[in-house]
Amino acid sequence: MIIVTIKDNESIDKALKRFKKKFEKTGVLKQLRARSYHEKASVKKRNVKIRAVYRQKIQIQENL
Image (tube, rainbow, N blue to C red; front, side, top):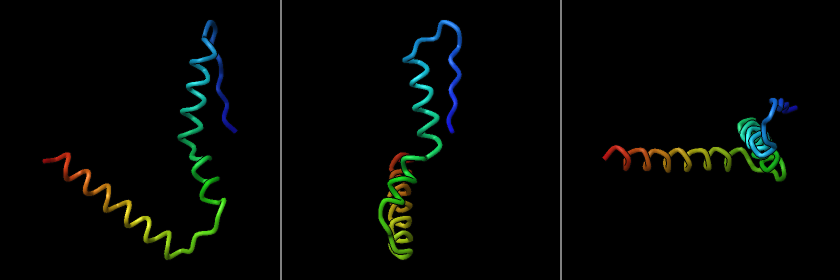
């Protein structure tokens, strides 16, 4: 469970923003989407490799 304590004189917008950051860091939504349908292990591995190659390409382009 995510708990966000609101400080004195803090606006609701700031507290909501902190809540959203914490929620995103926990990866709840990502995990929920992953569980919504079954994906074979071979497909998962393939997707991980594709993402890794993509990240590598971007990193190489940034270094140039």
